[in-house]
Length: 433
Image (cartoon, rainbow, N blue to C red; front, side, top):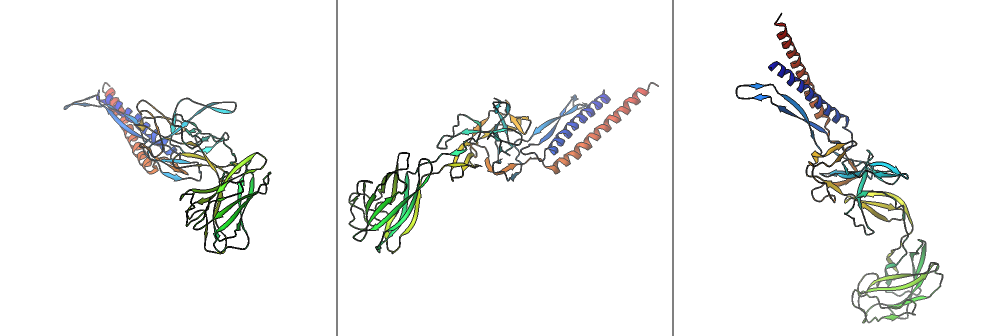
């Protein structure tokens, strides 16, 4: 019985070492695979009979030991859409099971991956090198994610619609030494079609010190209109009434407050223009009453323009796509604007090593792994996103070679046991002769 037991034990050793060699071979083959998690080998002994006076040969089996929680090296990538997870967590991904009208149809099952080498495909979806589609939360117009649903991220907003100018902000200093002629500066504004127009702002010195007349001229306006407002600076300034076109405008002063205006009230005038698409209301902000902001009058003999901005936006075409550390996916346009279209969450499990491994460095949830917890990056125990980087395989080649040598020697040793047992059995059979 002991000879057959020895043979059985050695055969189980050969089988176990073969499995170990298979795991090592798989690890070495995938040492450069993005997001790959190596498989180690645990050897478990099974005892036939064991006591204080007798121990019979048993067997050993090789069980895989997964390292899904072991971090791989994070390496910088030239791909701006690549992402690595620093810490625990997985990307939520989808798998296409076919197409309908040229668009992918997705498997209803949930898949997860650490492979973050994402790129935009021909349909605008973000896919990794294994063909899995990145999923995220859709966002509203304000960039707030809808955490009740998660879906494959698709970039299909190729145009940024123009925004008509509603406000022009002016910050400048009119000279305290009154000039003999008007000083002029130009602002710009966009109409509802995204076309750019010029607004001439002409400041003419008044009949007394600290008094100016502002004239707003819009050459492209289809309804030519004279727009003027009286500006008073300094102590004793009082509100001035314009010609009715742009309403009433109080004095602007960094040193004194007009009687009818409190400190900090906005100093602004509004005017209407028409470029062929109907009236467009524009507010010209000149700062605040009693504050040294916006339009002021201090010492000097030259007009000094500090800032002149407007809030309109021209038509924009798709320029690029970028990822942000909080998971936001932003579309950038050639008009300088950007729009967030989705947010990438991370998924955590109680025991990630119990996930079911699939092709392409993907995983599926199992009862042993626990439920999938979807959360924002860098929160609730999940890792942070490292943008423009990928996570390499967590395989250590030197360590695998060491394990390879040990497995090889152990396999050879087991063959020696088989050979020796075979010779002993043969000798036992030959005893009858």
